Length: 199
Image (cartoon, rainbow, N blue to C red; front, side, top):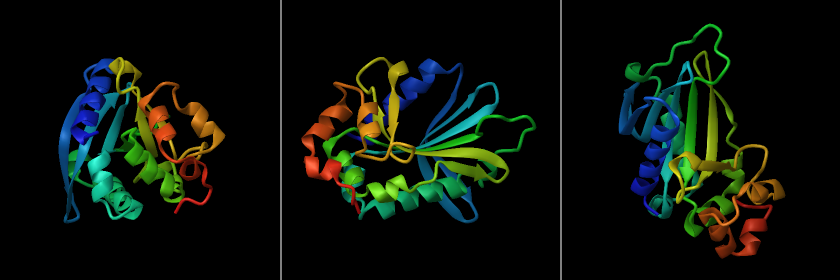
């Protein structure tokens, strides 16, 4: 599964569930002499502004990467420098009760991506969900996308860095029955899925 397929589904989802979201693909940033591009950038108002900064990883990206460290370096770079770019800056707001930014690292629900995350579960699981953009609270999520074949409103995620570590009973219960992710998990060797010692 390619990143452009994932991006299409993500764009369709945000367009369906939010009123007038600002959606940009391949959004560049340039801050502190660090340049980069994020796969999808979405600004919604709920009613306050919330930025969703999304990195998508399909089979090709996982195969090209030297490992989870490389993937996480790119993700951390995005988190560190995206809002440091003045054109994306977030400002503190009195009375804010929700995070002002959500940094998402989303994997395709394929056997290749499942195997990659399973064998590097300790690294992906160690990503702290709590984050900040200067004085603005933010959230980090590392997850598999689900609901890719149905209604765009049903696009969802199964996190691997929250309270349900990859391979745990709680994680497996969160995987929708009959989904691409469920099928991919079935296609990966049980010893890999159930291992407590992913590296």
